[in-house]
Image (cartoon, rainbow, N blue to C red; front, top):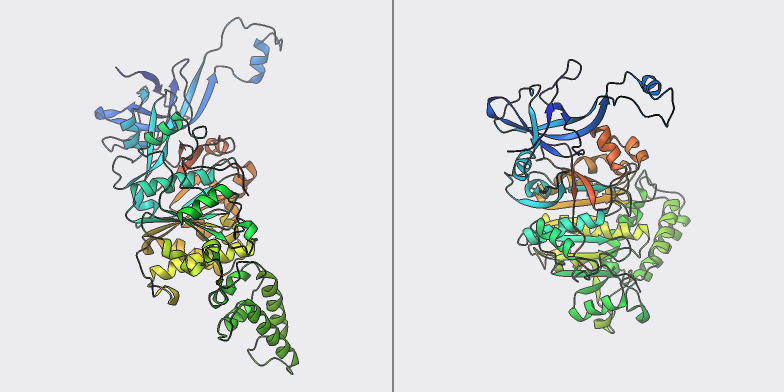
Length: 553
């Protein structure tokens, strides 16, 4: 017979409702928020509820009466009679197995819910395309696997995921890679992955297995618990920023030398560059952080892109210098013309911002060692079941914005029929999932430019185009409202109390959930998803199954 752990209590002050219920808990029974219970209801039905808060009540009239009963505040005094008390749990109704919406009656017995009952109550048994999201452990030791519905995670019904939390504690990147691995294992025939590495070199050896000391047998069991194999990614291509230095192995990345050598031998790494013929068309992306309310800098960039007689970046800089001098000699700006001050500003920005080795032409010598690859050719390596990792960590913010914006624009163009550069190589790139950390840099709440517009287009049209954004940031309050608002799935890691008070997105969580966010341990997250019947579910996920090198170059 199932163990009864408490009974429903409905009072005049706190009645049961169609959405909530309270029950007292058997003495010495241990529960916690996010546990799921089953309550016997009318007509032989059963109602499932998730615990949201726990309170302990006694018959004490107040603090002072308790102080008096302790011999007027004598901390050594033992009370003659133990006070009457009990733990009361508040719970949110999830589901009734006969679709009854009547409030639960006083005295109804409360039991632990079993795994199948919990999954049905959370809306997980009718998923058409389940994608593992993690698992949670109940206070009675029972473990329940949680899945996302693929049609709402990566489209077409809904799409896009956002992960927020404190860097280093929220494990945002690890969770994103867990989901990406799940997609590669579950959807290898239609999903491709584009991953931007923005911190260190943790994502630069995704196709190498984790060392035994980093992935224990228990960790491997956690992967299998979710229905996945604990294995690294397959079909991975790496793209590092080019460096014109043999001593640096022709790349500016922090990727460890031994890892880079293995990738060179396997032919899986490339060093990306911007030849002037292609790069001049992307100059507006170099200026997204510049305060340009009238978009004059974009007008300058558009005019430069039309110049045909430009063979390299030095020639382009000379051409701009001549334009600036010619504008200065004029008697005054013509109506609608760009002013000399604007040309000077644009020239100054271009001269300083293109002083990087990625702005170069394809070299004729040592092609096997240089492994140069124009960014316009990156998508040739993308397709269903494949992963493209683009390292932007060594680059300053404005160049990171250039690379991210360029790749996103290429993906959109490929989905819309292909750009001029893609006409010779039109192939199926699959449903593209893009992971970008530090999303607040690319789509800030205030300001922004052409890259923000690109991200808005992806989040607003992407689910129908087959482009999905997995974004992450430390502070949700710093990201454009429409980018956040278009994410069907939201993940919350450990977050500061200040951020919770500041960001309106956290107001939908109750006080217990908000407090829980400030102390979530590593490897534990709170998730929201359209198919869940609960507002949030707290889950754990396994450690990465790919290698994470300990040292760089």
